[in-house]
Amino acid sequence: MKMVILDGYTENPGDLSWSELEKLGELTVYDRTSLTDEEEIAARIDNADILLTNKTPVSAAALDKNPGVKYISVLATGYNIVDVEAARARGIPVSNVPAYGTAAVAQFAIAMLLEICHHVAHHSETVHAGRWEQSPDWCYWDYPLIELQGKTMGIIGFGRIGKLLAHRLRGLGAEVTVSARRLDDLAWIDAFGYRGLRTNRLAGRLGSFRVVFNTVPNMVLTEELLRDLPRECVLLELASQSGFDRAAAEARGLKCIAAPGLPGRAAPETAARAIKLTLEKIWEEEA
Image 1 (cartoon, rainbow, N blue to C red):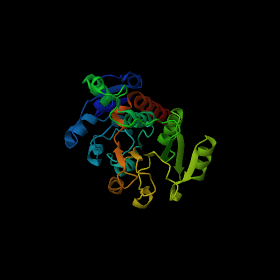
Image 2 (tube, rainbow, N blue to C red; image 1 turned 30 degrees about the vertical axis):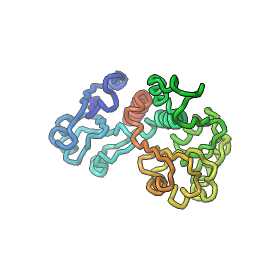
Image 3 (cartoon, one colour; image 1 turned 30 degrees about the horizontal axis):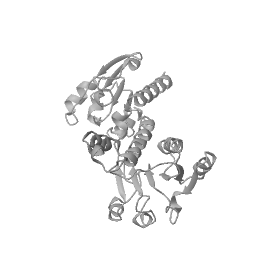
Image 4 (cartoon, one colour; image 1 turned 90 degrees about the vertical axis):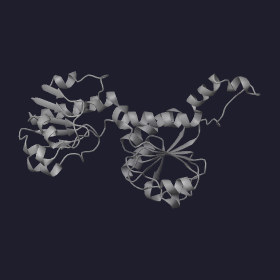
């Protein structure tokens, strides 16, 4: 089996190994391939059985020149860079790796939350600059310190990231509220011991939130709902498309932090593991 990775550097700049994929067959890895040069893209595919790409587009023209391609995987959560209709017409399955960034996104969300609470880097820099020595008080800080124990944290969405994030937040002592649309998700939210809310019935129920994490790539927190949030609430956007009206939030004085591009390089080990398992499953089914 012949495999080609068109732009491997994004996933593996040298700190990981492609050896697990090499066990499955002949593997060629390009660090980067042009996003616009169709000739280069087609030449590098080189009629491989399995084609892996992160952001390099795969067009109908490229597939015409490579009739041996049997499977295409996008090393990310989407597949919009592949001409799916052209692949379907040729009988080529196309997949993505939807779970590859789950653990990393939850971890980075916690990292951002702790930075909001403690501003550790800033505090370290100012202490080294002598600010604590010059302080008239025994204790020194530039920002109010926020303790998470007992604070109400809201999570919009109970997908993979929402589930793992809820677990992490409870481990920090927070009171976790999760909103979901589906009744079976709400049942699981209750079973896990979180407070559950219907996503379409949030009005009048947001007044106790100190932090809200959005994992849903659709508008949920409208300008009207944002008025229910206390002014000290922080909004953390984890979805690829905003789930809250940022302009309205900032006009209200709410702090907004967007991190839609987290998965990528933030999830090297889990991404590689998910990609490997996906390929093994496809190969077993094909065999």
